[in-house]
Length: 305
Image (cartoon, rainbow, N blue to C red; front, side):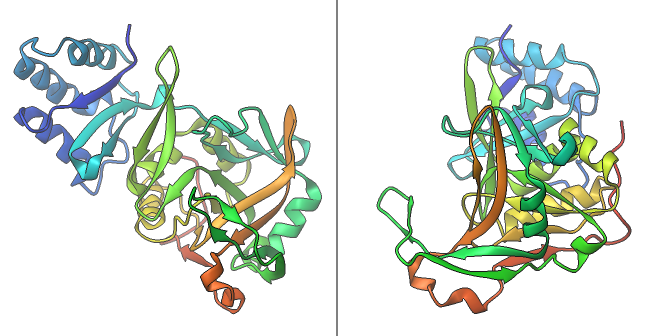
């Protein structure tokens, strides 16, 4: 049975356009699941009329899922290629704290990403609660960062006051101003998919590791860690999705690339967090490198089961 990754032929099928609109135009789609779109999926299958055997098999795999299985949308090529996938095939690993306390979730999507246990050290959490590192680098032709200017100062974190009374939770994913990357298990290999900010927020809201961290720390804030800046529409829309799901926490995202450092191994232990503005902003230590998307009300709460 193929994995439930369904590429929609939006240029040919009216049912596909209706399906895509439910995810890309609606403002209240946080709890969309198989049951919510089953009629549209059946209509899409009838319009295909067996012309696309791969899509037909993927459609059957999707409809065979439990009715409450969440469904998400991905988009490529400026929205010209759109598809659906179910939440049960997303690859994620927990981020832990001292005593293996749940503190968030990582979505590895690159072969070099750690796929084992991720854990913050006690000293690292104490350090990050008050400030963050600042290190200027310049992008190379390969998109990597050269540390041309060495280590800079440690700067007061935008969340430092709230971290005195609220727990820090973390999400880790590749990101950019327009979206995030996650990986899904196709049964044969891991496939990387791009999702917009709103769907990433929906993915977070439904993720078991993140929900467990929220249950452990209902009064918390979220720090998004990404190798490229997520501040802007991506992080703002992810925060909106979380808030609409009833998860009322403040979301912090960086205007710069973020790095976390630590000791790799079977358990990767993190002990620091820093931002890396490019060389042409080497004087930017005096500006705020983070944005915050505040919850409309109240502390964080676990999503509905």
